Length: 183
Image (cartoon, rainbow, N blue to C red; front, top):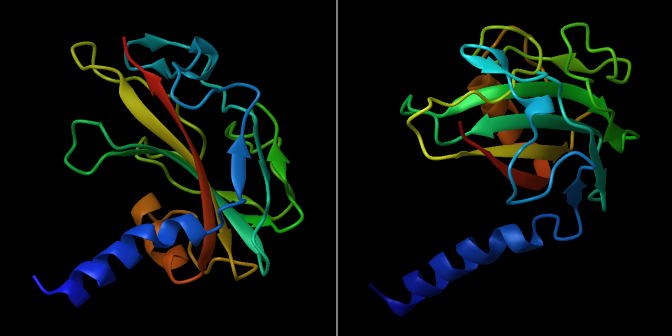
């Protein structure tokens, strides 16, 4: 491998550090790297949690942000492609937080204009973790994505993967919290 190629890969690997380095996601309900409380776990499929979406807050919004997308994803789900637990699009640029429970089926705590997309549960609301009993604890990645557009041109019924595809070219920052849950 040439030195120039190695340098190019090193630069690309370091790029996310400048991709909204001051952009942060926090939660009074979750701590990065720690276990998720039962309040936020699925109530169904063999789990008996509260199925409430956790409160989220973000700061250090990148310049030029016109909207946000929130996602919650389990990369460890035994599907070959992970599992999408929550997708919210078209959060206005003025938003800096979501209250606990905002992901209920009615989107009660979402700002006007925000839309919940279809998760891998097939519904447009938050669906808490419920990994198989025999699995090691799974990682759940909660992410706020800052976009350079005010509205993401996707139908709320498209898959979370399609939302990711649509926002990819307009994402100007991202901040995540990773929590664990196992049974």
